[in-house]
Image (cartoon, rainbow, N blue to C red; front, side, top):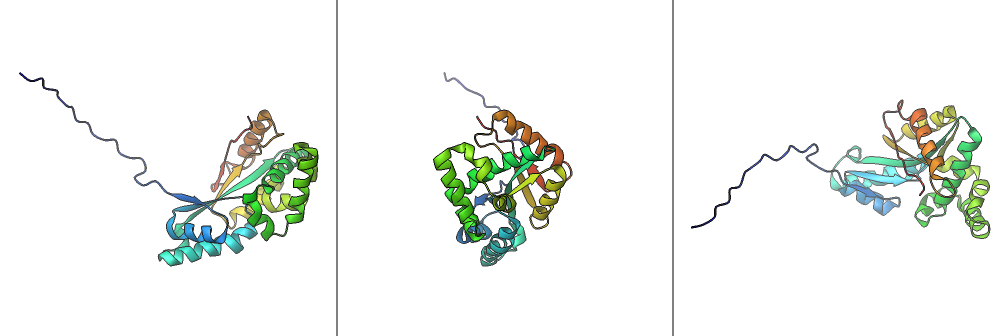
Amino acid sequence: DRDVTGVQTCALPILARPEIPIYLAGLRPLGLRLAGEIADGLMAYFISPNYYREVIEPNIARGAQKAGRASADVDIVSLTLCSVSDDRAEAMRLARISVGMYSCYPVSNPMVEYLGLTEDRDAVLQAMLTEGLGALEHTTSDALLKAFCIAGNPDECAEQLQAYTDVMSHVVLHTPYVPPITQAESAAAFHRNLHALGPTHRSVATTATTAN
């Protein structure tokens, strides 16, 4: 005698997305060309509209041309710092902390150097080394903010955002969160981004990264 085990078959669910798009992260020319050649999209951060037009777009096009496809086939996503508030001083404080911190990361060097802002960045870095993180909100220059962040009251931010959406099809608004910003301040900033800018811009998404 043998034991017989029955197997019941079932239908596999229909996939909501039959193909998963692959995005590459890149900021320098060779990485951008690779994304244009083989990827479904590019994930970039801390870029300005000028850097997009003058560096990202042409290098994506070169990579796409090598692969025999149109550069429009590559979805380019900009992860853009945004700080909006009716209290303009608070919006700018959070923006200076975030932009100052990100400008000091080595991965940001291509954009900082391309826009001639190394002295501004070095001043922030030196201040952090001597004064700590509290230096960020008073040493991050207006030039760094203008280059790398959307910040101000709702009307100002809507105008600044337009400069991004005029040249980019996919903008993700990145919430200020780095220390000394608190978790509660970051959460409030996310909701302000969403309420002030999210619903009226179809090409815009928001991120909710909060401090621990």
